[in-house]
Amino acid sequence: MRRELSKSAELLDETLDSLKHAAMLYELLKGELDDYLKNEIDLVLMITVDMFIHLERVLDAIEKGGDLDPIIKEIKDKEKFIDDIYQNRIYKYLVNLKVSSFWEGKILCDFIDNIVNVSDYIEDVADELHIKDDVNPELLNELDYALGEQLVLCEQKRLLSRELDRLDFQAEKTREKIDILAREQQEKLQEIQAV
Image (cartoon, rainbow, N blue to C red; front, side, top):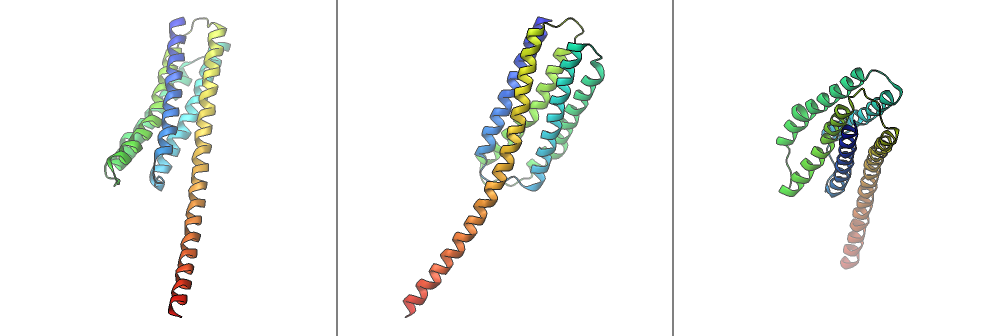
């Protein structure tokens, strides 16, 4: 029992690391994700957040007693769906995606891999917790806390993504204004030189 909880805590830590790494890679992406990739990644993230919620239900079922099988089946189904999205939609799309450099492509692929790997970790945690024995409340509280941190990180990543979109939009508007001002200045300079 202790081994399963210890392994689950390690897997939650790996999940946190994967999310942190994905957030770092997202910041390194030079351009905006195109609509297709953005929608697919948003779908993966929504399913992942739902998996975290189901993982929390697993912890509740262990703590209060209950049948883990249907909850764990839902987690496994969601993980398979994410794998399907990655293998049959995102990966096939990435193979034909034009990128400006090797590093741009590598950063994009690593970002997506880290996002997709989170569902694998969640499934692994659920598998480790698929036990019926008595749970040490202290260890369960530690796992519950770690799970809460994961949910907060997912929400922060989603908020960061929205904020980056907003900043990109503002930057584009500012660039347009600068271009207009530069053209006006150029026209004025040409008028003065013509006189």
